[in-house]
Image 1 (tube, rainbow, N blue to C red):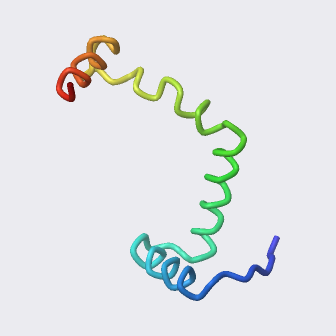
Image 2: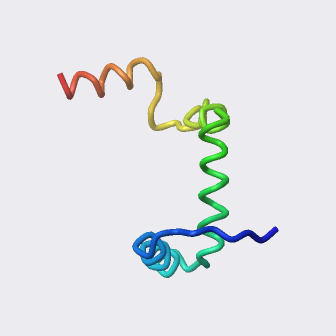
Amino acid sequence: MRFLADIPDDDVQWLDGLAAEQGVSRAELMRRAVTAYRADVSGDAIDNAFGIWRARDDIGDGLKYQRRLRGKRE
């Protein structure tokens, strides 16, 4: 479905630059933005990210990893 939207010129220029950088169309960036926003407001982003690191073997025990990271900061 097509639709018309008014977007400030500086945002359009930014979108065009990003589109060129990523090698996609402005329309594709808008589709991606809507998909990302929809996942964010619906909570799907959290559900999709849950367990994303479970297959990583370079971390080991998650709690030890977390404490190691915090130890470096504190």
